[in-house]
Length: 489
Image (cartoon, rainbow, N blue to C red):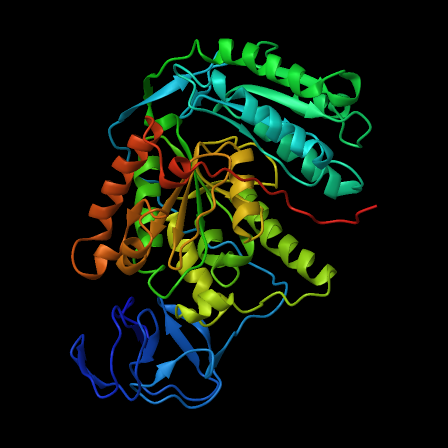
């Protein structure tokens, strides 16, 4: 597949053998080497030092002369990116045409928020009480009845011995989860002597409904497990009063993330999520794109889609701020993709980023969020978080995402605190790991269009929002991770 008319490389949708003669847009190319699925080969000779073009943009420069039909990968291409840059705003944003609303079956909270799950969450303020939280979770399963979808403890190793912004990150993420509408009831479980103890955390939570949020300090309890189970029973009585009802899809907030990508991710799965994002936004909904390091090399495409000068300035700050984070720790900004990405056919960070940002569709950028900040405006939002799968997905949940769409070419079993939909970029993965994968975008290799598959994904998301359990939920997988940035005392 030649993705863009100006590309100097094409991508093998299936494994191709040396000597294969291909006709691509009226051009004859004879392969000089075996080309694995998802990997690139040159359509024209590329001289050493010249840019290699994919998605209509440079994905790096040739380290040596590359003949037409030659395999293009890490052995003969390198990044062409530099360090912190100055950017100019060249607006290229066209609002999406509104489309008709669609309803899903969700929960309406007392404060007016919509939810796609009615769960009870146990949130430890500090890692010291993780095992207590798990013990309460186990004993409280008796209260999972009626409309209650699950009872889960979200453990983590933080909440104490942290300083400055690092400690602020923990408090903001915990508060974001405590306030998440998917939780019909929340038990905040503290130790008592930790830096981020319950009294310290309460101002971050803000106003709360005493029937929905309960607090337990273990050092003040004679039997913290028994007391915790008793509080879960009270929360279950309250949460059980909620029933599913018709809610506009315009109230949905959907996070978008990719991990373990391959050479097909930017051709199948990510563009399909982009088509979904445009469709949801056209109906008044909200999507959030994150993993800032995987915007490097494609950031100007997002910047030019910013709605106004202020959002452009916020996006520049988002990008350069993350670059400063890298350099402040003595790390290279433009580190190559992971071993799994490389094996799947991704050669440089530009290659990864240009494929990654396909998830954003074509909608204007309407908001930029700092780490731990709650989404404030509808439309496409950019969120500051790293590329790490668990950290970024947890950040999406804490910012208000009802679920996360996670595209992958390699596969992963993890799940974040909200329903995590695994979307395969290739059908081989979907076939091999049906216990992990919820939606197969590899079918695009054989037939169909991105727009058609985007509509199918939209319908799948509405089914999930209405209560259909995804694979990770069926397996009982729920995880969380917080962005660790500072000193541990």
